[in-house]
Amino acid sequence: MNPRSAIVIGAGFGGLALAIRLQSAGVETTLIEARDKAGGRAYVWEKDGYTFDAGPTVITDPACLQELWALTGRDMADDVTLAPVQPFYRLNWPDGVTFDYTNDDALLNTQIAQLNPDDVAGYAKFLDYSAGVFKEGYEKLGHVAFLDFASMIKAAPALAKYQAWRSVYSIVSSFVKDEHLRQALSFHTLLVGGNPMTTSAIYALIHKLERDGGVWFAMGGTNQLIAGMVTQFERLGGKLMLNDAVVSIETLGDRATGVTTASGWSGNADMVACNGDVMHVYKDLLKTSRSGQRTKAKLERKRYSPSLFVVHFGIKGTWPGIPHHTILFGPRYKGLLADLYDTGVLPEDFSLYLHHPTVTDPSLAPEGHSSFYALAPVPHLGKFPVDWDEIAPVLEKRILDEIGRRLIPDIHERITVKFSYTPKDFAQDLNAHLGSAFSLEPILTQSAWFRVHNRDDHIPNLYFVGAGTHPGAGIPGVVGSAKATAALMLETQT
Image (cartoon, rainbow, N blue to C red; front, side, top):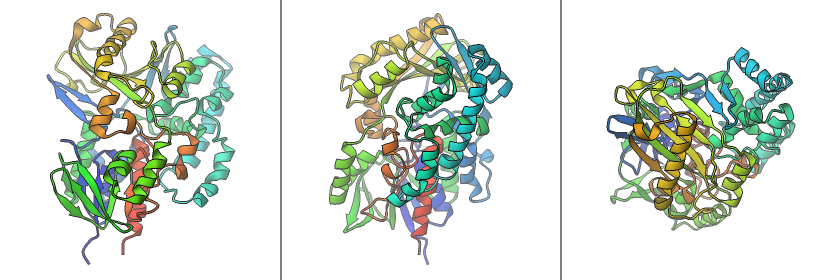
């Protein structure tokens, strides 16, 4: 019998990981991407000798990626070189406190003791807690689809044991008292679109994930990890189509039959999977489906993660003293988060994630130069509907001024190239609903069974992968969603 066929829409991390799994299992898979390169949110620009990754740039749990090659007995190292990053992050506050976040116990405990000696024991207890939620929330549930409420009930005792209804910040605060440390142990949820004040304490598992698996960088940039995944998919016989957006998922009765693209190409398949924005899929690609429009109405009522404002810049000089990942906290934490997630204003202050890849891989900039990007969370377009073309230059200058005050005094004189990426760009380039950078906000009532299901409830051969479905955003999250979704799709084979 001929292999069954599948079409996967969107060649981001989730779509690529799913396509590799399907193709390696003998499913004839076509992967269709609207943009000129694979990657989705992990896009790349090359300007004036610099390589700028759009993101994501923090690679954790490399084992989940290596598995995509091991499926067919290959080694990821043949296609991708991962380099360890230390410290994981340098955290810096306006009051001058600096904290190197690492998995070196001696260094960690020394720094914690300097902040508050009592917090050394509290941190050890938090680490035990993080290990527990990692086991229950990631190892047991991170790669398994929640298709019915019964599956949620089954998981409830473990979620209750770890007080999943509490926020990450609340749980952290029950273990440590120093405010700097509370922020250091809770900010991670921002990297997957979650507010530390409201995101489920289950997300404390990220700490254990990093401590055990480390933090890594793909030499050449995240784009080289994407390129390696494309190589693995194509060597298995998969077909990748670029520069051709899917405009419609075709249905007949309660079945998806295939897709139509902007160029007029039509393809039929036994199964269709979507790595695109979930709202875009239901609103636009399934606009002729009644069940799709009903789901769209439900999705419109949900809460979406904020967007991001990203300044990419290349500068003269090298900066060995600035680590690969830096978090520059602003003067406020709770208040700033409330502005971003609740009131939807663009505050005067901000917290920044500064990415400095050339400290690990100098080849990403011309000799004697460095590349950076500075990322600031901002409200999504639904909360802050403004003209970003007008605001971008102002915010860009404020961000660069802040980096100048705290790290690179003559930054403006050193810049040789710069450009920004705004919520408007997320909406236009990625069809991201409201310009959200991470899809649905990861609160407890939008997690697991409450998130978009990995298989559609009404169209049984339509599947979802990526940030909008279980388990959520971030590289391990979307690669985990691919594992869960592939298991469902392969179950249907006859």
